[in-house]
Length: 99
Image 1: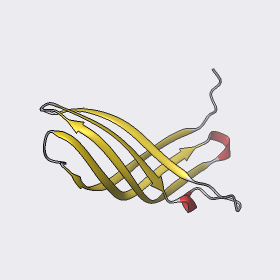
Image 2: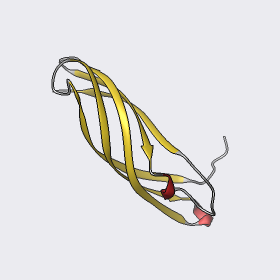
Image 3: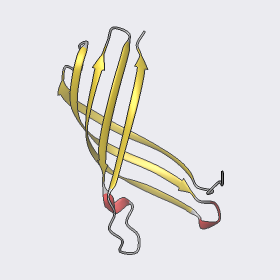
Image 4: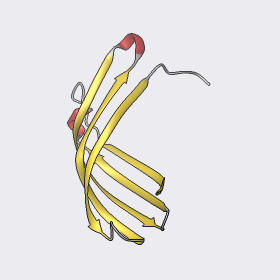
């Protein structure tokens, strides 16, 4: 497998508003926040992107385990270069163990 030489590090910070976030069972939520990521593409230089994110998530909570899936729209002008139109969406699946 060929290494493309691109290394990406970042963080998303979000607030959640939804149904059944504190109890066991099904949950659904809206998330709003900010993202920041740094892309290091070797000889082509570094790039920092940041902006607003808005998303939706669903999940299920048991006594000791959380399972969540979410999708979030990212502010597209953080990725626009040279007049190109882009859409940016992130998604994730998480399994958390509570103790």
